[in-house]
Image (cartoon, rainbow, N blue to C red; front, side, top):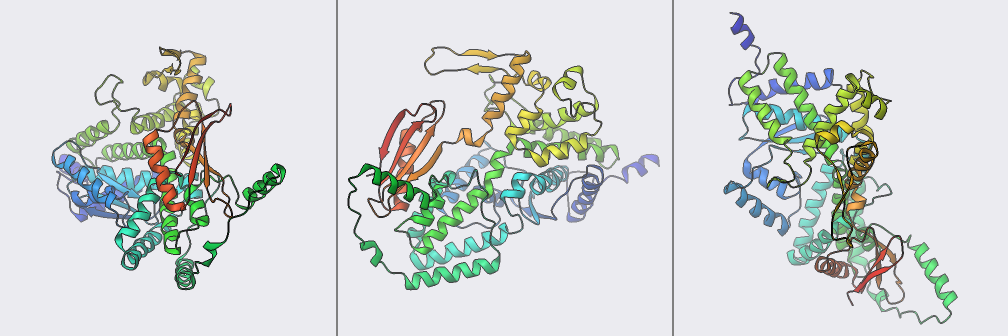
Length: 512
């Protein structure tokens, strides 16, 4: 009788699931997440989809509403072939940073996996999206779905009016510049409400009806012989155009002399989508670490309460172990540091430092060591950091030893690599700083800015790359990308690569 009573507490028994079982599991997860862990989430919307729909979803950047483009179909075929041949598995879920927060669950999942991914996505990722400062400042979860609906309909309307090929040509060039279509250092404008978007559409239609091409025939300005006057004019010109400008797509959208209003709106759509995903690129370790820590804590609490059987718990732990597995550098499966592994291990380490600190922890983390409040410490870290600052603040010597981290110095002029930082007091600081810098999006991406253009002169768009540590752009992709920039700008585009420290010019390339 006692065994029967214990089994009656189980949320599910076996691998099959139905919507009633999903609902019961969701309520049990929600109680632990909100009441015990103190999470703060958007309302949840769970969607059950097939494996083919899952492939389609993350082939089109994981959005529930997305415009059509040939690149999404190409990626779908590629991913589908790998999946059918057994070379790659599918994501168990996809979660959308929106309000309500939409979580896609794959119908092929077992009930145990539905439980894990609900805890992981619907509460772990959901809490991170709602509370992390980058998402709060740089995205609008309440407006993104409405905006994507507008974008899909708008581009479809453009295809009907101007032809699929014309629209794809603009999208191809916009996608090529997508990584340089974000504001990194200043806050972008919020997504507009439906009423504002409706006024924008009305303005676009009016511009298309009243547009005049006569201004293109304006004569170019004559040459200015006085160098001082030329320098003053250039300075005033740059000031009027707010140069330098980091957001290349934004500058082209506002100042290109050849784009029609509908083409400018498509550029705006692409850069808003790029901006929406920008915080996710800066918080991969934290976001996945938070979600993994949340699901691990919840499934263990469910097991402790007798709501998950031992057999299902083994399945959950096996899946969890696969997610946080970190191959060694000499393992054929090694492709860098697994963000799930590093993120989850750091969350657990913070919990240990708060509750069972060593003398080393007290020296390195005097503000949190032994504070007895791991929940509050983690909630604060999730809210106020991105990957770079999180690692710089919380990566402990114990973690560096666990992951066997050391630092190599690899100067291009040298014929050898040098182990420059090892496991000593100075080495720990240098390893932590170096690892943190590797997660700085600004350091990983080339710093390319618009530095000058004379709209009344030759109209050449002048770009400059500030080169750090001698990292040059790959020539073929650089030239192809500049070709796309010229297609959108309409006139010559030049790019200079200049060392950010010495001012040395590495290259100058022009599309003319």
